[in-house]
Amino acid sequence: MTCLVSCPSGLLVIGHLLALSSVNTQSEIWTNEVSDVQYGRLGSNVTLVCGAALDRTSVKWRLNRSSMLPWQHRVTSDGQLVLLQADRTAEGNYSCHDDRGRLIRTTRLRLGHPPGLLNVSCRVSNHSLVLCSWVESVKTLLPAQYHTSYRGNKSQVRMCVVSSPPQKQCTITDPTMWQHYHNINITETNPLGSQTTILMVKFHELLQPDPPEAVTAVGMVGYPMRLQVYWTNPASWLHDAVPFPLRFQLRYRPVGSSIWSNVESKSSPLLITDALAGHAHQLQVRAQDDINPDSQWSDWSPLLQACPWSGSTAEPTEETFPVDYNDTDADASTANTKSESSEDDGGSLLILLALFAVIILVLVSSLSVLMWVRQRRRDNVTKQELTSMVKMKSMPI
Image 1 (cartoon, one colour):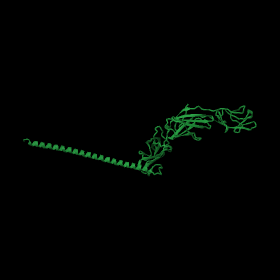
Image 2 (image 1 turned 180 degrees about the horizontal axis):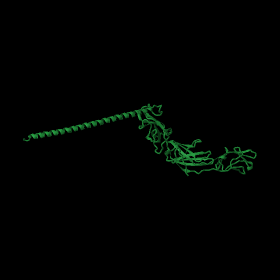
Image 3 (image 1 turned 180 degrees about the vertical axis):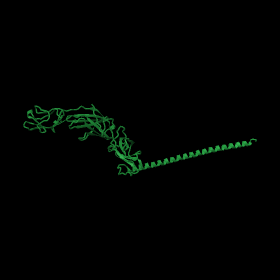
């Protein structure tokens, strides 16, 4: 037999069932002598005892002060009331009376089922706290008690502290996170029996931070394609005695687009340099433990909408974008960005001027060579003409 481990959206699937103890079913009836409450199993024959009666003729039974019993029943020779295959309509306050109508005993009857297996899920939001909760696979309809414990593969048994009713969860503080696996043992007990569920879990794989908080985005004056995004670590992550670094992933897209752009960072803030000018953008941030590669990404932060700077938009102020960050650092970052941009523009201009000068020099040199070649040709033609004239004059007439 296996145990189904449920995983709602705010929780994680935590492992598989190792073993199940057999159901320790008590007798169909369990009586609390102090409160005089009697428990029975639904669908079974339930027997109520009058106590001092000697024979059936001297006993009269009533349900909720009525002499009419609405359920199939019989009265034994010693005055006991047997309810046949009782269902929920048989619940109530029973009283037995003698032949003179005097009250002998009252009993409150409650019906239900023995415990079944538990659907268990655990949440590990930081390195020092594990929260496990469970849901009954069988609605017992009866009061129950839970005993929980856990044990690492290389450690002793420790208790998982159960919360006060009606919450069904327990808390593990300072778990041995880096042990390969842990066994979690949860036993449910009610008046009709008990059931134990044993699970094997790996805390380091279940580790999932809460989403980053205080996510905001600010347009940068003069840069219509830039957005500066800020956030803070989740408050639950700060509960660790030793701080563990997080890494973050930011996704963003223009409003109306179905395609996300993604970028990662190890700290806040993060600068978007390719925003679509003049369009509002949707942004979300999530986090993961930077040390543990087996950990899980957090859920995405709530969807945020922000616009880059445009010429008709005033410079954003702290009141417009309330965020917990260092203004001096942000201003210095903006100034550095502008300075780097100016330096880049100046360097590009010098390169263009140098290229232009080289082109001019090549053109001038080419023209000089061409003119020199043409002049040489002319000189050669003139020399040939003079030689021919001298030869002609020297010939006899």
